Amino acid sequence: MITYRLYLDTRKPGKDGLCNLYLVLSKQGKTAMTSLNMRLSPEQWKDDKVVKHPNQKRLNCILTAKKGDVSRAILDLSFNGAFVYKTARESLDILLDYLNPERAEERLEEQRRKETEAKSVAKYFSSFINKIENSGTRGLYLATYNKMLQYCEEEGIDFANLTFDDVDQAWLEAFEKYCLTTQKQNTASRHLRDIRAVFNAAIDDGLTTKYPFRKFKIKVEESRDKSFTADKLRELFNHDCYPGGEQEAVDMFLLMFLLIGINTVDLAYLTEIRNGRIDYTRRKTHKHYSVKIEPEAKRIIDKYQGEDHLLNILERVPNYKTYFNRLGKTLRKTGKQRVSGKRSTGHAILPDACFGSARTSWATIAQEELDIAREVIAAALGHSTVDVTTTYLRTKWRKKVDEANRKVIDWVLYKKKR
Image (cartoon, rainbow, N blue to C red):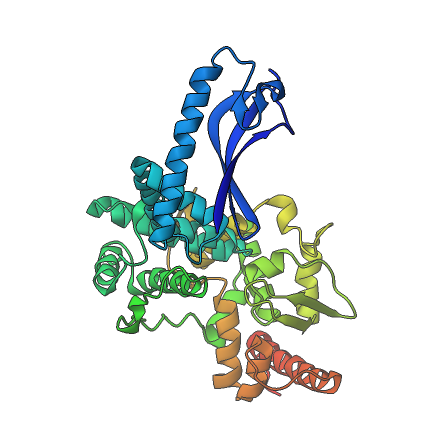
């Protein structure tokens, strides 16, 4: 049964000493209340009536009419079963909507707005990005977000109000076509994989049940082989480099190769050598690596010794990406003869090289030129599915990886096979 009463809240009077008057609805021991937009002092309210107030007659007439409206509304709504299985708060909203149809329309519009906002791809995508801890991954998703924004602006689509329901197979096909006008297939496909990941997260959060990727296949082009043979690497490592940037570019590429293709960010943030090894967790995959420091690697590390980190990269350049981008350009020009200033002639040794080539080259040479077991190569690269949970097995595979790395180094630097 639903009942109501008028209540003057005297707990927190305003600076003028006046208190708010409320309509309180009660149902099954629970209450909900709404302001009547009337303020009175405690002395001006007695026995549900306004007293000692200059306008008390008018105010009491308003309250009498209000109570009559509320009583009739409760009777009508109760007869129609509108309050069945409703909470006190829900019942109050039903009552107020009944008394004020305009309020009901405003609430319905607000509900629609919230539902649309909850399904907003832009808003959810943005919150998804903010939860990503890895800065590199966050940057890739942000690039996808901006690409979607650009596409929507060009097509006249309101990106802010784009919902998950709007992103169907046709939308994905059109977006992919738009990306391919300025980007390669694999870049466009990465954007689509990012969108798919956001869709999966939205489904997990109960925001949508739609999944347009069931019939939409994300295309992948085979990436260009970024590995080089031992002969090409020997040519690079034996090249009489110009002092400064060119020599440093080759040194860093060689060091990464000697450390079994360590990633640039992990190399920049190394802190120490312990027991003749570097131990680190790869930031991209969160896998643990332990690499033995061979004498050739130690010489390069000593040459670029840092104070707070193993190498002085971050002491000279605050952003490691800036450092390796600059060195990468130099690496791809190494082998050319300088004419004057920035001009050069001839051919570079590895014009297509990137620092990631150190990792792929190590693996390719190990397998194709030295016939090292694929299981050992997988363990060296962190791809092994072999159980390495026990200390014995970790030690066993570490020793095999160390031996494999030494074989690769001897073959590439000294053309010796063991």
